Length: 124
Length: 284
Image (tube, rainbow over all chains, first blue to last red; front, side, top):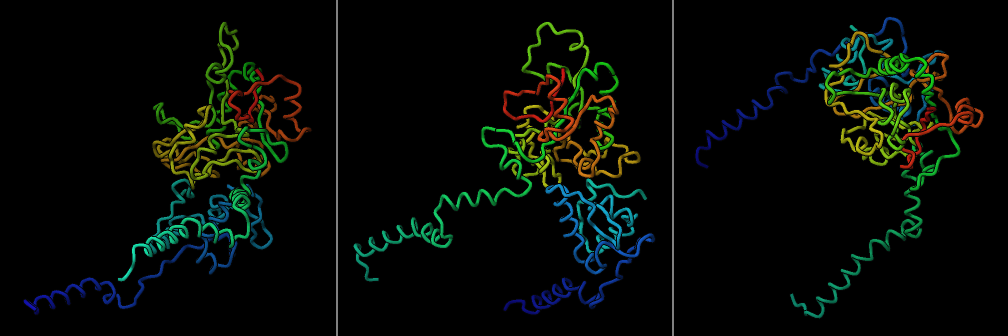
């Protein structure tokens, strides 16, 4: 191999540079986002762990039920109280801050949901 | 390779036959039905619940659905002539309820319901020697929520569809902004968001119970599906108060108020010859 030393050093440097974020943070995930929980309610429509993993599926389900099958009944329950299936009129009535709740995790995970292109976030 | 030309042609012929006929034979054996039945089954499953009224209601010739709910409206233009400010009040009520933006440039305009001249609303009716009241007063127009809606057939994503209650609804999540529905609507009742609609709204005074739209989707009157669904009257009907200028109800229920009004008055529809079967009726 011609210039073997240069190529191998170059390759090592390249690999080191590319993997920089991995070894620099060595397994540290960084500060976990802290969301502001509602003060008015203790429970959500589903247990917190389920909400954390599948709130997006739930919102899609609500959307399809309300918009496409026209089922606008107030059948979401927290305890005995019934709520309608609505992002703006149910979720955001307790989670009064989009910036301190939704955006916290969404910016951490670098996801950009398009909900707010149309749906109106609470005034902050 | 020791292949004779004769052998090669035999193999080629058999594999061509297998390729042409084999797949369909296997498909039939797997589904266990004739092709005609299989096609029909696919047709049925292709129509979801949302298309239930359309499925039994509108054949290609556009016959009117007899069963199920079909929401409609009667617009009494006599009441609008008596009270000249009622029209503007109705439009304002609709547009503020649904966060419809206000753009001064005609090309960017978004409208759900508005007032227009008689001959523009009723192009099929004779306009020679109009009387004063027809000349001086404008007609309230909105989506006709047709029973045989051409916009629904044109939509490639089923973003616009006919719901269980006979409302021609829009699902803005699905709209790709192709504007086929605008070309298909014979009444021109649809608007396209050329610009971000929020630029034409005062975000401090909007209705926070209803979303806005985004740039690049088509919008139109939704017969207040979000209000009707929770037992309220449409915003425009509510704005008329007790004047009965607008009567809203189920056209398929013979005892409903709207049917009584239709029975007691001569009504006309917009462009009836097109066979779209509008659900909006006018008392002129």
